[in-house]
View (spheres, rainbow, N blue to C red):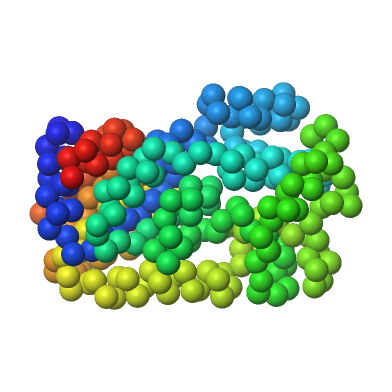
Amino acid sequence: MRAESIRTTTELLRQADAVLVGAGSGLSSAAGYNHYHHNTVFEENFHDFEKAYGIQSLFQGFYYVYSKPEQQWGFYSRYIRFMEEAPVGQPYIDLLEILREKEYFILTTNCDIQVPKVFPEERTCQFQGDFRYFQCSQPCHDKLYENHGLVEDMLKSMNGLEVPSELIPRCPVCGWKMVPWVQDSTFLQGEAWKIAYRRYENFVRKNQDKKLLLLELGVGDMTPSVIKLPFWKMADKFPETFLVTVNLAKESSPEHLKGKSLAVCEDLSLFLHELKENM
């Protein structure tokens, strides 16, 4: 089955004028960075938080209700540094090689810094933010703050698993607390976000009447309105567009897209590696 899917996808890539990739959390999981489940990476890097708070995954650690903000920022700072220092996963490297000679764009719901480590900013839209930045939690103004130095200071001064109160990031305008720039009820869809989203819209507009290949990689059901449903709509609406979905958990393409879609249930890391070798 995989061999046939590889051959079909290879031919679709060769024929495509442009490729739009929708990258979900499954792509990072295939790279070894599963943010939603307990695994070896979590045990090796966050065993002390697991022991102290019973946290079982990176995702749970981020949204855990800590007793004090000093504890919360202890986890935030460790989590951000972990993602900064994490090597680029092989599936991302393979994907770059697959796309290198094509007109392409990456739309992703991932915030874990893997995409910007590999792909140029002008070819990406990080729809749900990027852990490299902080924002005001109100937010009182439209600005993102690069956080490497702030995270460095917090980590250097940590007392056990807690950050000193005076180092908890505060908004320089209103004095309210800062938060990582990732999707939640306070998420800043400001100018930086709008510029990235316009890049995505412009790419779609430019290629909607061409042979456009949609590659949905590791997209689950948590936020279907970002990648999954728009991709279904484009595959249905645009005459020369074809959709390929690859997911380890299940095949996913609607009945009305028969003949314009291919649903593949495979390990993404193996699929992308073999696809790269076949190009």
